[in-house]
Structures are given as C-alpha cells and as structure tokens.
Amino acid sequence: MLRLLGRRNAYNVRKVLWLLDELGLEFAQEDWGRGHRDTKVPEFLALNPLGTVPVLVDGEAVLRESHVILRYLATRQGAEALYPTALLPRVQVEQWLDWVAYELTQPMRGAYLGGELGLEPWNNPWFVAQGRAEYGAKMAVLDAALARGGPFLAGADFTLADIPAGFVVHRWFSMQEVQRTPLPALAAYYERLSARPAFLRHIRNGLP
Ligand SMILES: N[C@@H](CCC(=O)N[C@@H](CS)C(=O)NCC(=O)O)C(=O)O
Image (cartoon, rainbow, N blue to C red; front, side, top):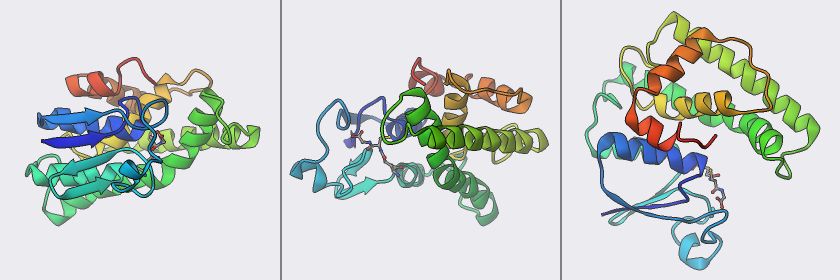
C-alpha cells in the first residue's frame, strides 16, 4: 500500500491528494508537518533529509518533491492522458509544472504566508507587497494563455499541468487581502476545475 506522509492541509500535500484521488488509488496517509508530527525527527529525516512534506513511500521507493511525486504516480499508473509520453504533448505539461514551481512559489510566500497568515519571516511588508504584485501578474499571464488556448492548460484535456496551476488559481481566488482585477478566462478555468469532484475534495474544500 502506498504511504503518503504529510498533513492534509499542506499546499504541496494537497496536490498529491488530488492526483491520488483522480487516479483512484488507495493509500495510507499520515499527518506529519506543522501542527502535527514533527518532521525533524530521525524517523522522518531518514525518509526525507529536507524535513518537508509530502513524502511518498511505494515499497522500496521513497520520494520527495510534490511535482516529482505527481510525475511518478502518473507514470506508475500509465496515465497517458494525464501525462503523455509523446515528447511534444509532454513538454506542454512539463512547462506548466515547472512554471508553478519556479515562478509562483516565492510570490505565494509573500502574498499568502506573509500577507494572509502573517507568518514570519514572510510578513515583511516589502515582501508581502512584492508577492501580491507578482502573484497578480502571473495570474494575468495564465488568464491570457487560457484565453488563447484552453480549455485546459495543455490543451483540450485535463492533465498533470492543471494540478499545481489549478491550486495556485484556487488560492488566488481564496485570498482575502489581495486586489483582484477581472480575469475572465481564469475565472472560467476555476469553475471548469470545480466540476471535478477530486478538486472539490482536496483543493476547493474550504481551505485557501
Ligand atoms: N518543493 C517541495 C516543498 C515542500 C514544502 O515546503 N512543504 C511544506 C508544506 S507545503 C513543509 O514541509 N512545511 C513544513 C511543515 O509542514 O512542517 C515540494 O514541492 O514538495
């Protein structure tokens, strides 16, 4: 049985929960991380020396990094539609996965961890303002991309690309303290994702 280590309310864990649900996989989940079991203990660090969640254990395989876990699970299940093997369709997916990891992580720390939750060290006013501006600019990029293409990020079908991006879109629309300009294609995309029960269970589930 797959083991997923990580609290259910963590951004990076929720992406994996969403995919596990889309794939209909059974797994055992364990609440590790902030407010739950301490990840800085030897038992956890032996699995992930970074002390972060999620960690996925699949027999001998021990994986960290949420996007790597997404890729692993889709490949393990042969989920061709979610994660195509042909080169060009695959890079359509990859580019959005990396974009969220590289370009959205920092703005989200400022806008969400600093601006919404007021957590240190991210609540520095400059960092919060910068994060909000950058997050908004990225959402406008996503809106324009969806207006040109869509209905999903990699084209006609829902793929792995929509999981991290779908989450950051959800968080954008969930934050209380940001100013949002109308982004119609993004708003329509959010509603499109909301037709997926797994999205409603793990992402648009009352948590930002
Ligand atoms: N790049 C990593 C980041 C992992 C990460 O920072 N996870 C956060 C939760 S979203 C964490 O472990 N926070 C500390 C904690 O919960 O104790 C990934 O994508 O999995």
